[in-house]
Length: 362
Image (cartoon, rainbow, N blue to C red; front, side):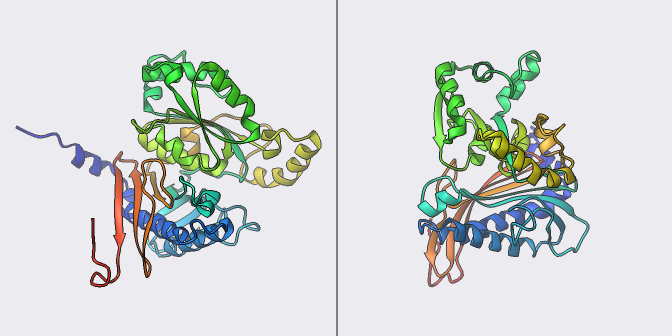
């Protein structure tokens, strides 16, 4: 009997970025994760981030592409490497890509040895990644079951402006669960105190994270992860990186840019100061006070068609094992990667220079 040709058909659908750059992208995030792993538990989050950034940049500059950082380590005058607008790659070849990076998502987690830190990156064709400022995004992230439910029930959609209970009810119905069975991840911040109270009053369970809500966002699209929804305001870069993975996995993110002073309930004077400081830069990105509050969906955050994503664990976390160091630079790392074709890979990579000195083992 003829067999289904799923693998062949998916491979044929892969674009040039996925075919040529995804295998190398895995190596980029793995190198950054190994560099950061040497600083795990040493209490210096800045140096841990610094070595991850330097490693990621060195690896990127070996790739035959013309890349531009759209989501990076900050503005040009704030970050020495991987700043927004920096050009990376050898410049050789026809591939022109936009890039979102977070060389070390969870710097505090790495410095203190807590779970959940990763080195992560996404790419797409030119114009395929949101050119975002280094401010916050308020967001909701859900998996593909919710997307399917919304298609079947067009009058019922998750909404940033809706009451928390409204959104929880939609997710519960989409998953065939009660609200009491839902787990919502949210950053443990004073700005989220009211939202946390509302989630609990609605009956759902809350999983607070001190840092790093990117991978929990990805986990909403993975059955068995135990995470059904991510809510709250965090970094805009993390939201865009989440969107890249969620787009490939069939889930959904809706988000809205918000100034940190607004999100954290600061005085009007402080808000006005931040507006005066940041709006000139935001306007260069096409963001004005008139459209700052627009709702951004998955396709506005990552409009590209040839999207790739890779995340490598530094410390253990959501469906990823931590980086193990063997001495002399040898290491074992665990990565999740994916491309717009829909193929998802969990890669267990072992880097050993001298197999006689350090034999390979399972």
